[in-house]
Image 1: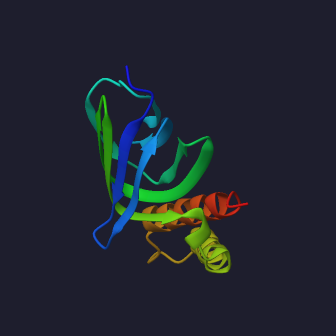
Image 2 (image 1 turned 120 degrees about the vertical axis):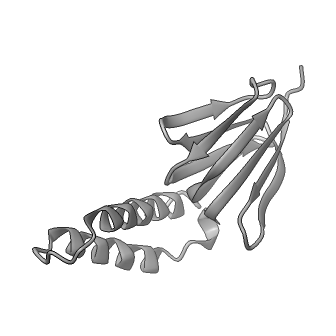
Length: 135
């Protein structure tokens, strides 16, 4: 059995990752999935969360929001609506988005879409967590 698998992460705008990975974790709709070489084939929907993968002994972190992942024994393809590498995240902007979402959630305004604000808060928190791992 191989000790690596091909990993591709793509958004509508660009190829974010093309690498050979030893392992990865992805945020599925029902929770995180761990992927190793030789994994059983599956397709899963992604939620808002962190993708992490290890390549050549180094762990990479990305913030992802929605999409799908196809897992094959020798390849994982992620088609994401949005995906950002830790080093590409503007942490100041993410903190501002978090503050705006928290304010909307605390609001008594009946026009506030609480599901949308809750999702915005989750995305902002994920982006902040991932950005802080770029060290």
